[in-house]
Amino acid sequence: MVITILVLFMALIGFADSFYYTLLHYGYLGFQSPVVPMICELKQSVCRTLATSAWASTFGIPNSIFGMGYYALVGIAAVSRFKLKYWPFGAALTAISIFAALFSIYLAWAMVFMVHEICPLCVAAQVINIILAIIFTTTR
Image (cartoon, rainbow, N blue to C red):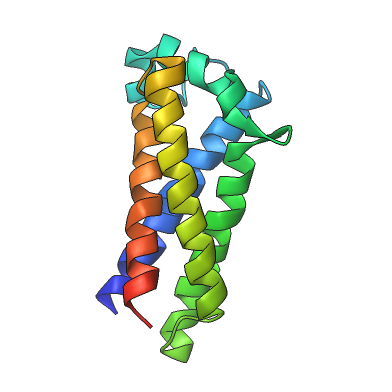
Protein backbone atom coordinates (compact mmCIF):
# COMPACT_ATOMS: atom_id res chain seq x y z
CA MET A 1 0.00 0.00 0.00
CA VAL A 2 2.80 2.43 0.88
CA ILE A 3 4.60 1.62 -2.39
CA THR A 4 1.41 2.27 -4.35
CA ILE A 5 0.94 5.66 -2.68
CA LEU A 6 4.60 6.49 -3.37
CA VAL A 7 4.19 5.52 -7.04
CA LEU A 8 1.03 7.61 -7.35
CA PHE A 9 2.77 10.59 -5.73
CA MET A 10 5.76 10.26 -8.09
CA ALA A 11 3.42 9.95 -11.09
CA LEU A 12 1.65 13.18 -10.08
CA ILE A 13 4.93 15.05 -9.56
CA GLY A 14 6.36 13.69 -12.82
CA PHE A 15 3.19 14.60 -14.74
CA ALA A 16 3.21 18.16 -13.33
CA ASP A 17 6.91 18.51 -14.23
CA SER A 18 6.32 17.24 -17.77
CA PHE A 19 3.20 19.39 -18.21
CA TYR A 20 5.16 22.47 -17.12
CA TYR A 21 7.93 21.76 -19.64
CA THR A 22 5.36 21.12 -22.38
CA LEU A 23 3.82 24.55 -21.72
CA LEU A 24 7.30 26.10 -21.86
CA HIS A 25 8.16 24.26 -25.07
CA TYR A 26 5.07 25.51 -26.89
CA GLY A 27 5.38 29.02 -25.50
CA TYR A 28 2.22 28.96 -23.37
CA LEU A 29 4.35 29.94 -20.40
CA GLY A 30 7.12 32.47 -20.50
CA PHE A 31 10.21 32.17 -18.41
CA GLN A 32 8.98 35.22 -16.45
CA SER A 33 5.55 33.65 -15.75
CA PRO A 34 4.21 33.86 -12.17
CA VAL A 35 3.64 30.08 -12.20
CA VAL A 36 7.28 29.30 -12.96
CA PRO A 37 8.68 27.24 -10.10
CA MET A 38 11.09 29.17 -7.91
CA ILE A 39 13.88 26.81 -8.91
CA CYS A 40 13.51 27.97 -12.53
CA GLU A 41 13.29 31.62 -11.53
CA LEU A 42 16.72 31.22 -9.98
CA LYS A 43 18.06 29.40 -13.04
CA GLN A 44 16.06 30.89 -15.93
CA SER A 45 18.88 30.50 -18.42
CA VAL A 46 19.21 26.80 -17.59
CA CYS A 47 15.48 26.14 -18.04
CA ARG A 48 15.42 28.14 -21.27
CA THR A 49 18.54 26.43 -22.63
CA LEU A 50 17.26 22.95 -21.92
CA ALA A 51 13.64 23.55 -22.95
CA THR A 52 14.80 24.81 -26.34
CA SER A 53 17.75 22.46 -26.94
CA ALA A 54 17.83 19.74 -29.59
CA TRP A 55 17.85 17.22 -26.73
CA ALA A 56 14.39 18.38 -25.56
CA SER A 57 12.62 16.49 -28.39
CA THR A 58 12.66 13.00 -29.88
CA PHE A 59 11.34 12.46 -33.42
CA GLY A 60 10.14 16.08 -33.33
CA ILE A 61 7.98 15.48 -30.25
CA PRO A 62 8.92 17.15 -26.95
CA ASN A 63 10.22 14.60 -24.44
CA SER A 64 7.83 16.15 -21.93
CA ILE A 65 4.85 14.87 -23.92
CA PHE A 66 6.24 11.34 -23.74
CA GLY A 67 6.71 11.97 -20.01
CA MET A 68 3.09 13.06 -19.58
CA GLY A 69 1.91 9.86 -21.25
CA TYR A 70 4.23 7.72 -19.15
CA TYR A 71 3.24 9.35 -15.87
CA ALA A 72 -0.46 9.12 -16.77
CA LEU A 73 0.00 5.38 -17.40
CA VAL A 74 1.84 4.98 -14.08
CA GLY A 75 -0.87 6.95 -12.26
CA ILE A 76 -3.63 4.81 -13.78
CA ALA A 77 -1.71 1.67 -12.83
CA ALA A 78 -1.29 2.90 -9.24
CA VAL A 79 -4.97 3.75 -8.87
CA SER A 80 -5.88 0.36 -10.38
CA ARG A 81 -3.54 -1.41 -7.98
CA PHE A 82 -5.57 -0.18 -5.01
CA LYS A 83 -8.52 -2.21 -6.32
CA LEU A 84 -6.75 -5.14 -8.02
CA LYS A 85 -3.97 -5.69 -5.44
CA TYR A 86 -1.43 -6.20 -8.24
CA TRP A 87 0.13 -4.02 -10.91
CA PRO A 88 -2.06 -4.11 -14.02
CA PHE A 89 -0.25 -4.73 -17.32
CA GLY A 90 2.76 -5.58 -15.12
CA ALA A 91 5.18 -6.82 -17.79
CA ALA A 92 4.47 -3.89 -20.09
CA LEU A 93 4.73 -1.42 -17.21
CA THR A 94 8.05 -2.92 -16.17
CA ALA A 95 9.44 -2.77 -19.72
CA ILE A 96 8.27 0.81 -20.24
CA SER A 97 9.68 1.90 -16.89
CA ILE A 98 13.07 0.34 -17.69
CA PHE A 99 13.09 2.11 -21.06
CA ALA A 100 12.15 5.42 -19.34
CA ALA A 101 14.98 4.98 -16.82
CA LEU A 102 17.55 4.19 -19.52
CA PHE A 103 16.34 7.12 -21.63
CA SER A 104 16.60 9.34 -18.52
CA ILE A 105 20.21 8.28 -18.03
CA TYR A 106 20.90 9.14 -21.67
CA LEU A 107 19.23 12.56 -21.27
CA ALA A 108 21.19 13.19 -18.06
CA TRP A 109 24.39 12.45 -19.99
CA ALA A 110 23.31 14.85 -22.76
CA MET A 111 22.37 17.51 -20.20
CA VAL A 112 25.78 17.38 -18.56
CA PHE A 113 28.12 16.67 -21.48
CA MET A 114 26.33 18.14 -24.51
CA VAL A 115 24.25 21.06 -23.19
CA HIS A 116 26.58 21.74 -20.23
CA GLU A 117 23.73 22.74 -17.93
CA ILE A 118 22.01 21.05 -14.99
CA CYS A 119 18.26 21.47 -14.78
CA PRO A 120 16.82 20.65 -11.33
CA LEU A 121 13.37 19.81 -12.72
CA CYS A 122 14.90 17.52 -15.36
CA VAL A 123 16.98 15.77 -12.71
CA ALA A 124 13.85 15.34 -10.59
CA ALA A 125 12.04 13.59 -13.48
CA GLN A 126 15.11 11.45 -14.20
CA VAL A 127 15.36 10.34 -10.58
CA ILE A 128 11.62 9.59 -10.49
CA ASN A 129 11.98 7.45 -13.63
CA ILE A 130 14.85 5.45 -12.14
CA ILE A 131 12.98 4.91 -8.86
CA LEU A 132 9.84 3.82 -10.73
CA ALA A 133 11.87 1.32 -12.77
CA ILE A 134 13.33 -0.12 -9.59
CA ILE A 135 9.87 -0.40 -8.01
CA PHE A 136 8.28 -2.04 -11.06
CA THR A 137 11.12 -4.53 -11.50
CA THR A 138 11.10 -5.57 -7.84
CA THR A 139 7.38 -5.64 -6.96
CA ARG A 140 4.37 -7.43 -8.39
